[in-house]
Every structure is written in structure tokens, then in C-alpha cells.
Length: 123
Image (cartoon, rainbow, N blue to C red; front, side):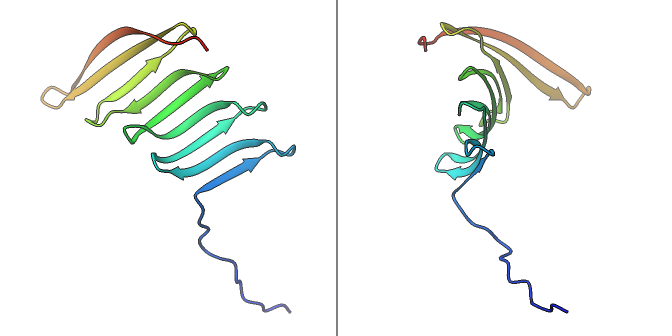
């Protein structure tokens, strides 16, 4: 009968953890950088596909990428307002923002839709 005590640590501490696939390619990173914690998923070529973390002004943000270009951004601004941005093509970034507030007096959501274009450098 083996009666050895469990001596494994109960806490594992590091600044960054990389998870690799069976070919040694980094597929997931989990880290705590100066700008905040993040979880990032990579494709087979090492390009970011999904990033979840404290990205803009240390606020929670989810970014979805296609061909190394961000396509969808979902986040919360410092004032607590939600943000949603949809991006398309490489020369112009179109951000579609929906802003909604809950009115407790009449239990109704009020939404405002705003569209803006920003010039973006071609990759």
C-alpha cells in the first residue's frame, strides 16, 4: 500500500502560459501583461484569431480576427457603455456602434445606432 503524501503545489504562478499543439506551435497564450490579463488563440500559421482581455484603456474587450485583420470588437468603455465594432476591407475601417441604455422607469431599452468610417493604412 502506497501512503505517500501529495506534495504537488496547489498554486502555479507565472506571467505567461503558452499552450502548443502536437507540432510545437503556440496555439493559446494566457498572460498578465502591463496592460492587463489576456487570453489569445492562434491559427496554424501563428496568426491571432481570437483575443480576450483588457485591451483598450484597461477595459474588457473581445476581438475576432480574419487574415490578421480585426473584424469584430466587443467591449465595455470606461463609463460602462458597451461597444460593438464591425470592420471590413483593408483600406477603410467601418465601425458600427450600437449604444443601448436601460430605462428603469418604464422597463424599456433605448438604443442608438451610429456608423462612422475611419481611414486605415493598407496592410
